[in-house]
Image 1 (cartoon, rainbow, N blue to C red):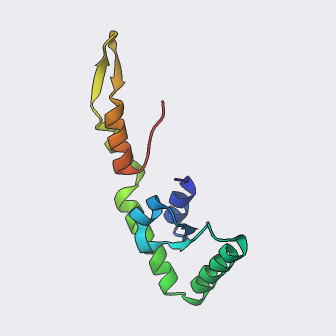
Image 2: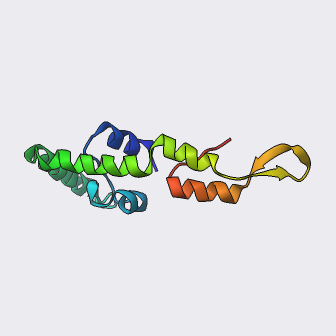
Image 3: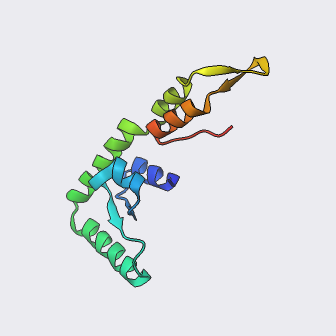
Length: 120
């Protein structure tokens, strides 16, 4: 998932994005979707319709972006993600008792729970 989705939502923008499972699962109807598998002229028409809707709905469009922002704050804030990562139990490496290593299955669980991952 692109960080542009999170940046746009955090900034309070009305988001137009492709129909992807992550966005639909986590943000539902708080985003405006396009079918990127359509021919380019149809994708352009869809984007244009969404932009026209945003311009012609000065009360509904901000409510839509607020709904997405509320979801972002509830699920994807940095403090929540860091807390989930910090709660991953550490295991000792079998070859060295001085080198703690994170259990990768626990990291995967924390990553899917928060939507964020960390690479070291």
